[in-house]
Image 1 (cartoon, helix red, strand yellow):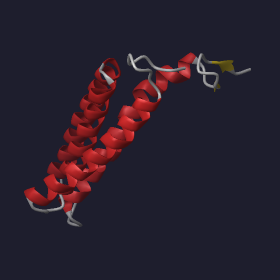
Image 2 (cartoon, helix red, strand yellow; image 1 turned 90 degrees about the horizontal axis):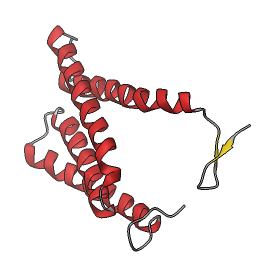
Image 3 (tube, helix red, strand yellow; image 1 turned 90 degrees about the vertical axis):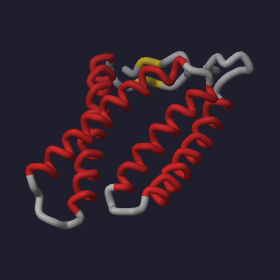
Image 4 (cartoon, helix red, strand yellow; image 1 turned 45 degrees about the vertical axis):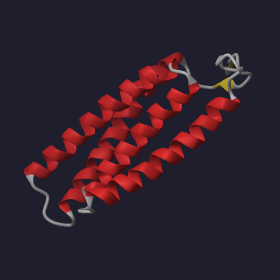
Length: 138
C-alpha cells in the first residue's frame, strides 16, 4: 500500500527506491550529457579515444555540478533557488551548443535565453508553492 506524504499525494516508491534514484538520476543524465557533448564535438567524424575521454569528463563535470546544485539550491530563497537552476541549465545548454562550432556570442545568447526561461518557470513554481515567509506550502 502506498504511503501518503504530508502534501497529500501518495508516495508509491520505497525509501530504498528514492535513495537509488538520488544517485541514478545524476549518473544517467550525466552520461547522456557527456555522450551528447562528445557527439556535438565529433560532428559526424570518427570516434576517437580523445572524443571518448572528452565525453566522460563532460559527464563527470555535469554530474558533480548537478549534485551540488541539487544539494544547495533547496536551502536558498525562492529567487536564488530559481537562479541556481536557471544558471545551471543555461551553462549546460551553452556548453553543448558551443561544441557545435557556433560562435561564442551565439552560444552565450542562446544560453542566456534558456537560463531566463528556466528561471521564469521555476520562480513561478516556487513563488506559488511558498508562503510570504518563504516556507513551502504543503
